[in-house]
Length: 297
Image (tube, rainbow, N blue to C red; front, top):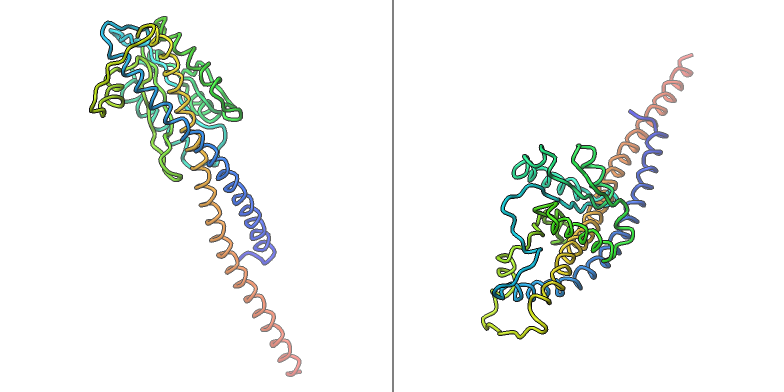
């Protein structure tokens, strides 16, 4: 059995760790509220933007390079949204496993031929996929330290330009969608080419009354201006969802760590009391034995 000093040191160390995990939980809770506010404020705009784009693409004889459906998919770009920091449970690894399984099931040939390129957002995504020899053409460590729309739009504008000039035939985004504080959906969504059928399903299908719009100057001009914004918004929404999911996962992980520390502290205190009682019993036995030996002389 460990001596009393070792057990006391372990109890002290666990109490210090417990204070750290409590503080990290409180910080994550504060960041989660802010992240949820940004995410919630963005959702109505993203939904309405989708509806407008859906109405525009339904106009006859309208065309745009971002609507181009390639005859054959030769090169794919996958944008993976991870995190910059750890201590958030399985937030990153769960998403990365889904990405790897999807690549193995659907895009193994592209990966083997070097025609699957990755953009890693966050330090964890960069480290994970570079270590496993994936073709990471660009990475953004520290991305969430200064989270803003302009940084997202720059990434997506470059990706859209590469799609427009034929460098890539398909662009995907992998991210964690926020559901609740303790749960997330791991999603891999196709951003380009824009699928008009998916727009119809999420846009005007639920409307019972069809409205005949008059476009000024014309639908083509409006679509050319609004489609890049729509595509940029897809990455911005994914980043905001991922950020809120990360803070929720970290808060839950730190709460679990605090509870585990409490259980471990109670277990060590029980061991400490047992060791202390054993030491006291041993001392009493030695005293009694010594006294009996002195009486026998």
